[in-house]
Image (cartoon, rainbow, N blue to C red; front, side, top):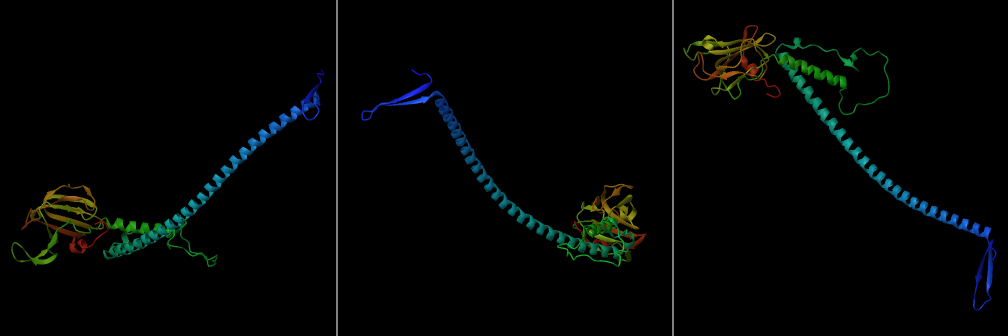
Length: 303
């Protein structure tokens, strides 16, 4: 038997027996080719599987991209809507602030206190205002929404804040919530003698024990008994103003104490020269009696 060759014998009933001879080198080559084809087939199958997997991943990415695009469009619409609402709210806030500023400015002017409001220099871009040069130009870019620049808006806030600081030391509003006016300022008939007399304040009637509040920031300069006033508190405010609260049932502040507008200083009573529970309330400026009702009828936000 030849060891270098491989023989194949084909036996058939109808045909003569056939004999094939394959040399060993050719056989080895055939085995190598078969192995190579097998490797290529396996590689092709693997590549096809990866391709299918990649295509599926690509389809998912495309779907995610479309979802993100739709979400992005929805977010853009929401942002545009929120921006519109913000502009509307800001425009309303600026309008309200301007209106309040005019009311406060008018009030301060009527009280003769405008000179105490510090004047602010106009600013732009954080620097002092300078007059523009005669040469001007540039494209027309109309403002949208609010017509105030950030610097102008800040100036408006600062102006209102300055006015409010002045008003915080002016006696405004009623010292007694729920009380009603029983006797006004000026000429009246004395309740004890029946003779004509000058009433230096106003009388506010309420329930005994009703809290009495300071009508402005200031400093208590007297707290105690004072003749016909009974228990009394006197507060010095600013710009020459002072207030007196008489006939108190109880005092809860002391001389030298700083108080804020709305702070309770005592409780309504019937002490001193009084016909019943009420508050005798006075407003003075530089020692001159003023009609407290002018100040009581003024209302500030939050009061």
